[in-house]
Image 1 (spheres, rainbow over the protein chains, first blue to last red):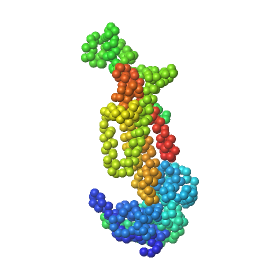
Image 2 (image 1 turned 60 degrees about the horizontal axis):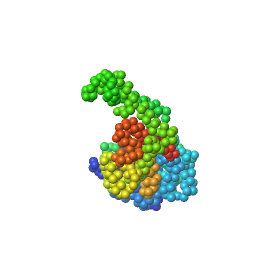
Image 3 (image 1 turned 30 degrees about the vertical axis):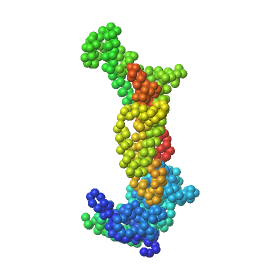
Image 4 (image 1 turned 135 degrees about the vertical axis):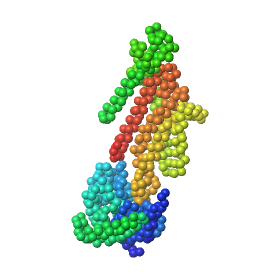
Amino acid sequence: MTSDTVIKAENLDLTFQTNDGPVHALKDVSLDIKKGDFVSFIGPSGCGKTTFLRCMADLEQPTGGKITVNGVTPHEARQSRAYGYVFQHAGLYPWRTIGRNVRLPLEIMGYPKAEQDERIKRVLELVDLEGFEKKFPWQLSGGMQQRASIARALAFDADILLMDEPFGALDEIVRDHLNEQLLKLWAKTQKTICFVTHSIPEAVYLSTKIVVMSPRPGRISDVIDCPLPAERPLDIRDTQEFLDVAHRVREGLRAGHSYD
Amino acid sequence: MTKTLLPVLTVLFGILVIWFLAVAPMNIRVTLDQAARAGGDVVPTGAVERRETSTLSLLLNNRSYIAGGYDLDRPRLPTPTQVGQELWKTTGAMVLKGRTWSKRSLIYHGWITLQSTFWGFLLGTTVGILGAVLVVKSRVLEMSLVPWAIISQAVPIVALAPMIIVLSSQAGIDGRGFPKALISSYLCFFPVMVGMIKGLRSPSGEQLDLLKTYSASGTQQFLKLRVPASLPYLFTSLKIGVAAALVGAIVGELPTGAISGLGARILIGDQFGTPLAIWAALFAAAILAGVLVTLLDRTQHVLLRKMGMRT
């Protein structure tokens, strides 16, 4: 293992026992994620992409194989607060203002009050929500709420960001805008990002590495390095290079589906 | 507010009309008995025959006496006006005469019942919330406590109330205050407990997972997520709970030989054959319940608004 490997999975298995017999959510999954990578996980429902992310976060326990986060077990990584997690739904507490929602992890982790204030200010600026600190979640649009939840994940010093279809419930225009912002954020913060998505253009546009997964059993069918430059304006999606990568991803998805 | 006023008033009007119409058939027999005794011309004349005649034909054959049913001293069913007058006589008129705390005043009796309700509500709410916390915290306690809580509500409170009185006096507790509060809390704790269990469990899996990713402690999860999430549920159950506590306090006054309190007024009215007193006490209880529930509703509105939640 090289020193800049952040997440390393070796022959990871996860089998859920259900009433209809065992379900192989993950089978023989091996992957290396390097520091500063932006890795997208793409595949149809049931391919295990979310489960894989949840294994990294210690929210699911693999039944076989080995996974390390920052060189330690996911459990130890979670206890040392090594990652921020963004869920599909913003999940802001309705009884807290945006500022106090971002404060939540800081309160729990016991940051001093003055530092909490300073961090809230900084991350809200980072996601373009300055001035919304005193607003309640219902006063914000869905896209703004999701940005607030990203700010909440950025508020403490985790250098890994795990994002589970964070923009899945948003319309395409808002999604484009947030994708652009996310790339800027990634460039600014140098974090390692794992990003689960259903959308091929989203995966190609954002990633340095695209992991194509397929279901029954959930497994990795292709890992595609995305050669697009670091600087990516939205119209890069019309270039031949972009379309070539998207085509490869689509081919990978199709190959995965040929099993059923 | 004005939006709900019209439907509420419409229903109220409907009830009053049905009530008013029901007075004639309900009171016709008493009216005819009295008229016959006073030598009036009643069809049929014999009391035994009248008993075997249907209410409808009594009404049709004695139309001139129907009006009398609306002005009896001891009616089977008093008119809304009679109840209103009795209610005023025992409340507002007493205040005007400076006899607010007289033993004949429903304000005095209402106050007695309200005190029991208050202590019962306090005790019941505390037990209910504590029970819910324990049940949510521990699977073992859930399996051992919840069935008993459900069984407790299957026992008729009127059967239990005398025993609580006897046992508490045996335990050397003077006065009826404590047993009454206990009976009242017995009815009150259950809705609070059920509502709080639901409320404390209301956070979604995603919300709980989020705290897990912060590696938050159990106490933090409880205080920062479960408790605030349960507040809307708490208020809904408090409103049911306070009405139940009032019913409990009244029931606690029935079989205990109490001489003050709305329950005692109902019992005494029954024993002395003064239906107006019963009806007035019933309405006083209903009004009291309405006031208590409204107070809680306003508190809920203000508090949740302050917490930024839309109500």
